[in-house]
Length: 492
Image 1: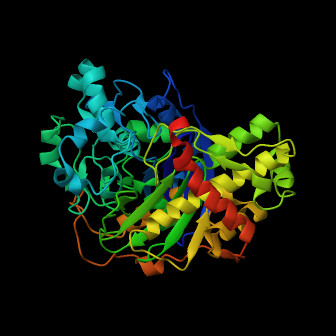
Image 2: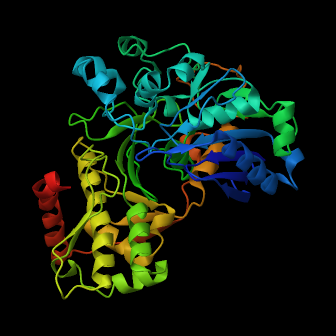
Image 3: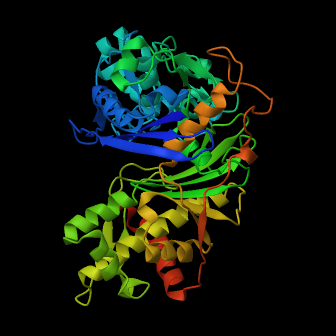
């Protein structure tokens, strides 16, 4: 059996998987995201550590002796600064943190050519800008830290006593040469940013250490179990869902929304609107359109209107497409793809006496769908035009909401019925990792096939197809949405 641990933004999930890929047990435990100042987003890593013990003990209580290896996945972009033993020197700064807005100017000052190896637009909340803020805002912590780690890499350090990262997380830091799979040392030196606290980069399926006795007691597992490096949550989710072939395109709707396109080469976005990250398997990358306001905006509106989720959907879909002229711009926390701007706010535009709260609910659903469609258009602008779009995520379960997404995107959606895809991807990496005779910390660059299973041997999850239907009213509303944002941007 193989244990996958997914360290999410608001909860940690543990999943136990059999050698055949069957999910045997899973559990999760929540923890808070703290905002000590406006625009900040932090977590206490000790909360992650405690949640790990609770969730893992639940899933392994009857199977601890049968666990063969552990794999990890986790939220991207954030950073934990800690001492050599893994003791955090401050709270973790998360991907949703906006304090490093001005630090991006240090990057821009280097010029386009110097930034090219990063292969990504400059975005707040990524580790590099956050560490630049730390250099100025908390210089003593900056000086004292031994390691600057991604969240799941910090967890692995606590589990094994060894520091490492892997390509999928490293590529999302704004500190790595994404195509080469190395730290961008020359760029970091030009930023006057420390490089001695960056861990070595190993393969996602490499054994990055073994479970220490104290960590084993904490989790209720035997000591010395191999711990595989793992992958960033999106990369692990692609693997867990069986979407590992170049051209696979995947829409996930959760707190935010992400559209990922798997590729077999690092393809840069000439418009600089989408992200490029390394995948969990060797010699694979994925292009990412990231929209910040999906379930987040819907949850806010649900609470504002005093509706249950069932009532929100029931009322919203009594309204005809186009909402009788009402449009919602759902930018409650700014937007990444395609606008790359953390400052805009949201709005309902076109309100009249004839509008009801059902209209407000429907307009928000349509606004989120239109924002996702803009992200898809940004992905297409890179030269991609996938015919098949897979759909996953807890925010995409209602059948009429799925239908609205298909109609707005003008693509049939193939709903992938995989629960806990990131945790399952982590468990699959554990399975792949111990199927190989390799040294701890082996460098990640490699060309050989994957022993113990290839990308084509990881079966896709069962699917439900949602056909799209033409809707002139939706197309008109979508066009109005696209025109409104630039027209009212200065007021938002």
